[in-house]
View 1 (tube, rainbow, N blue to C red):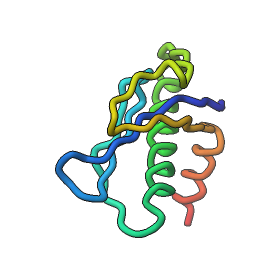
View 2 (cartoon, one colour):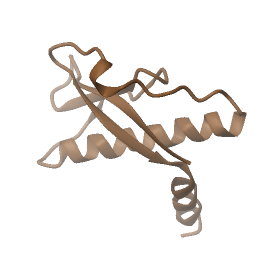
View 3 (tube, rainbow, N blue to C red):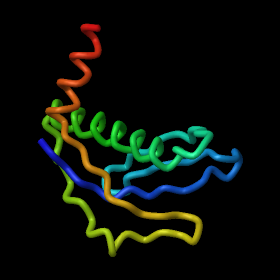
View 4 (cartoon, one colour):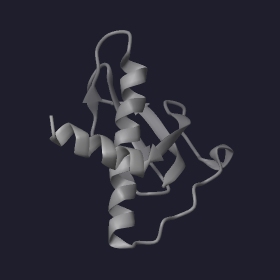
Length: 103
């Protein structure tokens, strides 16, 4: 299945070059993680997609209700946060994980 949810990204209050990502519709978030160099935005988004895939697989596997995503313009953020859309493809992610285990 494919999903798209808004994610809120903000810098960690205690660590430089460290970001937190949370999905308000799903109640899940990353812990702060540090990324150095020019690709920190890219890796933040990669980490967010990984979190979303894992969370959605858990919901699918348990048969839990999957909430509808909030329209991005309706997501409330503070001055130090940004909101963006993150896509998950749980079928592709499961295949990727299975292939990695066989390496």
